[in-house]
Image (tube, rainbow over all chains, first blue to last red; front, side, top):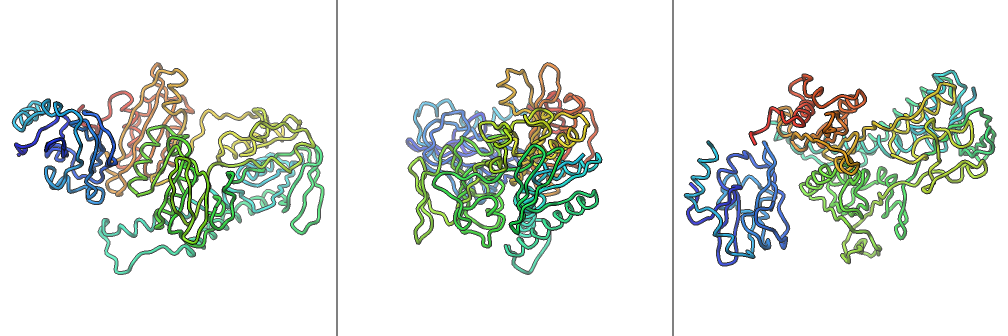
Length: 128
Length: 461
């Protein structure tokens, strides 16, 4: 189940917003679709990033895909643990598998994102 | 016909053999060892070392393949170098044996042109002799280029020649230049356990390749923890007790134990008597030749690195065949339209024809097809899933104009496209050809299908 306290982007990423800080990662649906994750190309801290642009790249045994940032801002922290153990994303996409913390430029961008129930509906629509 | 070939690298020795096949009386002058840079210092030694590092990587990953081992695995550089020496020596003997079998005389010493029909050879014992020739083929090759402030000393500042004879694995190494040599050597020493930093003046690694290939390799470097810094130069180096302090043009400073300078090659067109004979040279010192590989002095030909262009062994060999044929009265011209090339980084890179940005730069309307290595069953079976295939076609005709592969066996796989291009085939022709399963070659077919929007093993978009 997708946690109620997160906001979701249509490119299957999530954010958890605390003040100006947004912790983000990929959704359970995304990790399931990707399959076994073998590598993540993480951004450097201090990278500035726009909403809807590529923040990181994930390689699974099946595919290589872009991780799209749900919000714009500056990357202030990345989950270095993933460079050694990217499989954590498969195991805990909403927990230890977080990818980065972004300091948000424009908090109103968060309002454009889906809540858990909207995301569920979106997934249903997409699978049709 | 008396033909004298100056130099016995892949340009010279092939020219000598071709001339002998055509009935000429052939002499080859060589100051070092037959096989030239390719066999003694370049292609073959590095591929031998790469075979060792691949064995090492496989040994480290035995468990992944379901094999248990009880001992520890570590590289022994001296033994690797010994193996490299043996491999090179077998190849050298092979060329010497071919010379013998075709009645080619090998004259060991340094040759200088003294007239359009004679070369003086200074033998290694200091004595001199004059060799008469009706036709001369110059194949003197190239040597590692140095940069101001970083002269090679063979100990701390290494050329690519020094790099294949090092006696210990450096703890830290700075590679200057992320081209073919820097990329390959960076991967070798990284696998052997060195901390590798590569600095590149240009904006990307292997800048002669397609941009997507460079980007992919850069990601593979990050996976290996090879640090790549682009758009910077080495300003100066200061050697202290704690190692070498390297100051970069962007103001950064880093520490290293060794520096490999791999910024290109200088052509060996000096001190061989060209000026005396009035043989024309270009801006980079390259000997100017026509499509028959003949210089402005009739009867004198030049081939290989010394004529500039792509510094590739197989391009040199082809030029050698063309020059020897013309020297012996069989008319032939050189065709550079299809020259496959490989970079033996990890993963390997191979290319033929145009890069995407080149085609766009020419104003062509193009289509591209891609296919990831990781979508191939064989790749998973082998445990090597990194890389992709890319085919570029002329959008109007569907004819293939270029192909780029990064991934396992890329250097062997590229030739399917080279032949297809030589035959003027379209992506459809490759796409409609059954490819054996399970193979890496299936990726070429799928990429060709993708040009047409018909790749089978891709998720619905």
